Structure formats: C-alpha cells, structure tokens
Image 1 (spheres, rainbow, N blue to C red):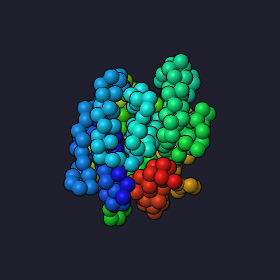
Image 2 (image 1 turned 180 degrees about the horizontal axis):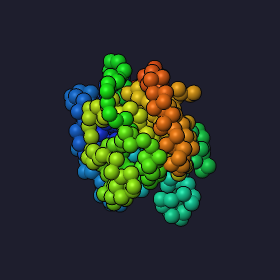
Image 3 (image 1 turned 60 degrees about the vertical axis):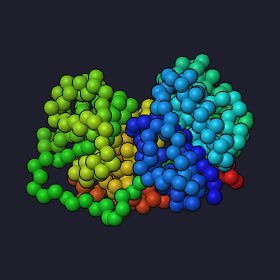
Image 4 (image 1 turned 90 degrees about the vertical axis):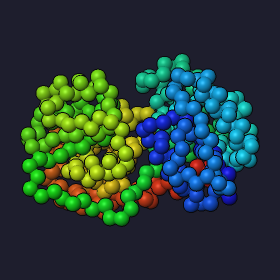
Length: 367
C-alpha cells in the first residue's frame, strides 16, 4: 500500500472531477489517500484508508496565502507518513513551494500548460519565465519529478530540465459506462454544432462564429460553459451571432453528456497558439470518451487516436476551411458517428484512464 497525498487548492473547471477520479483510482489500488482540497471529494470514503484535509481555495496572485496552505498540507503529510506527494497544479504552485520541498515524501508536480516556460509566447514576461525555469530546476535538483500531458510540453521542459525527471502521461478522463451509441434524431429541422468550454480566442471561437456565415441557415451553434461576458458580447455582435445559443454556466458531467448526445458535431477549432504551450484538451478527450464525431484543427490532431476516422481535421484560423470541414462532416455523418463510437472510447480507456494515469505518476518515483 502506498500512502498518497493529492493536493489541489483550486476549485471549478476540471479540478473537482480530476481529483475525484484520482481518488477512485487510488481506492482501486488499495492505497491510503490524504486529499488536500477546498471541496470534499464525492467518492472519498473517510476512514482507515483515507482522509480529507480541507484547505483554503487560492488564486494565482495569492502567493502568501497559498504558501501557508501548502505548509499546512506538508505538515499533515508528515503526520500521516505520506510516501508520495502529488502536486496536481504546478501551473500555480510553482511560486509557493518552500526550498526544502516535502522532506518526508517523494514529490511529483503535474504541469497542465507550459506557457510560463516558453520565451516570447505570452503569459509571463521573459525575465519572469527565466525565474520560473530556475525555480522548477531547483525542484528537480532536490529530486522531485515533473509530469506533463503532451509531447510538446515535454520538449519545452527538456530545454532546461534533465529528461530523466520529466514524465509524460496522458490526461485522464472518464469513459461513460455502458454503450455510447447515440440515438439519431429523426425529422429534425436543424443541424446542431456544439462548442464546449469558454470561448477564448486561442480556442478559435471567433473563427467558428465567422464560419457560420458560410454555412446553411439550418446549421445552428451552441456554446456550453461559463463565459467571459466581454468575449460573449463580441461573438454575439458578429453577423451570424443570432444563430448562436448559450448555456452560460458551469455544467455538470451529466448535463454535458446530454449536450454531447444532442449535438450532431462537436467543433473544436483551436488555433495554432494553443498547441505551442503543450496543453492537453480535456474537452477533446471527453468528446472521444463519449464516442462523438468532431471537427477540429491540426492543432489538436496529435491528441486524436492515430488515423482516427471519427474526426474531420482542417487548418487552424481559416473560417472558410472550417465551414468546408463542417459540411464534409455532415455529408459523411453516419460513418463519422460509427467510427467515433468505435474508436474514441477504446482509445481513452487505453491511453487516458485514471488508473493508468495514477500508476504512471507513482511509478516515476517508485521505480
């Protein structure tokens, strides 16, 4: 039995389901789990094999408060004889770690996006990026490991960290239980596109709304997820903005599954800039897990199953090309659906399971 600490002091977005999935995987292994998080984990069974340590939720700029939170967690790790400390959000915690780290346990830091370590690509200023590099290198020098989700992120870190201390393991998502086949609506007057998540520029939301102008009027678009209101207003002001509906709130996994089932095509028109920082697309993986056909760009193509036949891939940043890709998807929708249902869930089970993810993190420090 391995005694594990899972630490994440952020709420919202992917954090809750991510931590919950890792807790479930740890229980399946028979490990002890100390969960340090602002919110309780639904499937955490407190008792001899687990404990929840409530911590204050902190934001990126609350460095002093976050340091205090982390110090309280490291003390708890010593009390609980923790073997492995899994820091699940290095993107923020990079600035809060003490010089000595967690002396009583091996540590793995999970980095979701590497843009803070790439010069000249937005985010932090270059002097701050140099400082972030030095700080992360000091973690490795004391023996810590760093985990990333994509080959791009691994290559970015390899420029200043030894490869032996970087591991790549596919971002985990749940695959729905039972068959994923969709009931195809009959006599529907509209064809439905779905965009999941915040309509950020790097995700190609503006390109997608522009592409609507080149598509027949019966093709409608829905954005699902909590939005930045300025960005939403910008998209609503576009000529095709009236053809967009908004579910502008955080949606549960159950609600998202319903939206995925009801959509004909999930469209993820991510721009090339998204791929430069090595982030994994949890939305794409969730779409694959549900066996849904997708129209996306070459930016996300490396994250698809090899030679995936359930997706249409177009060049990023081109509204005309995106419109053509969507029309191509509708033209071959029956076969696209079939291949998505056949290939997507299997790929996620094999490459992006929580069990495999946790095993990869632990193996990096256990040998």
